[in-house]
Image 1 (tube, rainbow, N blue to C red):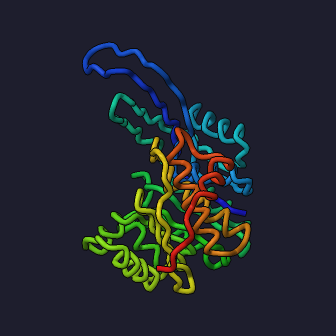
Image 2: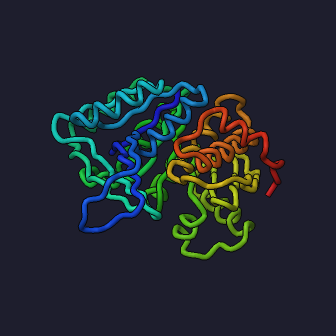
Length: 306
């Protein structure tokens, strides 16, 4: 079973206006509400690909109930910790030529709430994968990822970490199964400029030396690079297509990789499905469906050994 954790889920309230006028009443042209959060995105794409998984994390109030209801209606299994106080956040995304976002803070998470989450880890085994993705709410310790990894690796659980900067680096000593930095995050970690693909491979290998088993580097329109647990490097160009929405594309890559690995235990196939899933979501208004992902998969070029 694959489990995802989203510490601070949200309802993304997306509104489109023809022309936004500050200080005046504006009428929306269209509206939609989607569940938000990196772990939730991974769960949704895994579900679209037919891979059983469970979404973990924290929800609160009527907004939290709505997040859970939407996920269940889309076929996702959930096992959230329900907080006694506060409301799961609403993030407002205003589309008017450019995109403007106002993100909520979310509820406070107590020590008792964390203990409730840990109790859900007790059933995890060597057959399970746990995905840690996204930022950490201010009410939690900055070491929460590391603490969770330290707890579950004793059970032989494979852990995926999709985080940035020091948050990611602190997790490497616990030997995550997969990490997915993008090329800019790779530059920030090593404080260097990476202009060539061979430079990206070089620093991906450094992350592997620091503890990660598999390093998947997303590079947007330039494709992606994978260094697998055996030290083999793969390179794949991005497919042609019109980018509609990049939100969730990286999370879709993680889901595609895990779905491919779960299906065939083959890193080349997992990598190719990861690129297909990430690209398909970027070409769609919402997270990609199986049909959209497989259509892109069939158009991908052969993988190059980097």
